[in-house]
Length: 426
Image (cartoon, rainbow, N blue to C red):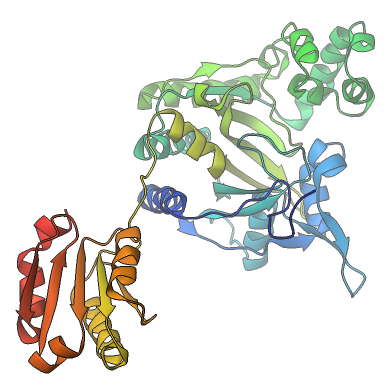
């Protein structure tokens, strides 16, 4: 039985040094996405349920099985966001776009899906994503994929494989669906219950099933792009041409469809061997979304990457932040009279010595006990004062690595530390 102090299944607490890895991902994302003209947006973690149902599709696994939906006190059906795109598009529509305008935005944040927890897959997980709304150019699709590749290079996630395909246009769907039905119907009895249902509700999703037996059947399905119209094939050819021109390595995956119904034209996914069997690292595509109450669809291109999965991929490549000291400098105050001067000294050091962590001990414990605490914190320098040091206006400076110590006049302390900064805190 779980303890009341443990996080709920599928959630976790995050501590340093792991937090520093998260910060590194976010910093890299901001740096790279800003270079491409994207601005950060922050949206609520819950929306009206219809925002997701209308955008993602009634028959998607996310809507059917995974959303955390509840009724609020006003009787409204609300849902914790299971993905980022729908809420971002709602925000862009709320702000408004003039004819010919586009919005390029990126976001970070927690998402929520009620699925079985696994490595890199949690009920509260986090995504970094981008959306370029209001541009229907295949060149934008290529740039978006190139930007994702650039971001992965920046954070040191190498060895991934980019897979792309086309979902076509709505007018392509009837002939593609008919060809898929002709192929899957004889195989359906041996496929999972979900795929048997999808045969009549959303046959494209049979290509996206995670059941190994169903994947084996889907591998023999028709090539989707070859069944689509001239305009669709031309659009896809331009995307591929652009990626070739940019030097982005990719492979065409003829049966890649992604799991959400709002996609049109380009869909893409990046897999990574460091993630094991569930190897999807990031993915996205071009979409058209009709928001509740809107008359016209909103078109855009975007992607999202699970941040937990990015960290797993980095870890598989040996790129993890090692343990970081709680403190670089420990202030040790011996006796009641030394505590307030110790507090002032700590504050002065923080204001003067940027980039160093300063931790003051206010417990009044013995010197031995406080030194043990300083050692556990990882401090490289201990500054010690008791009644004698206060009377003489000096600070006893102890190098925690060599155990050497020196009495330094309080007036010279800042200069003394600054002179030894590179050797003490390297």
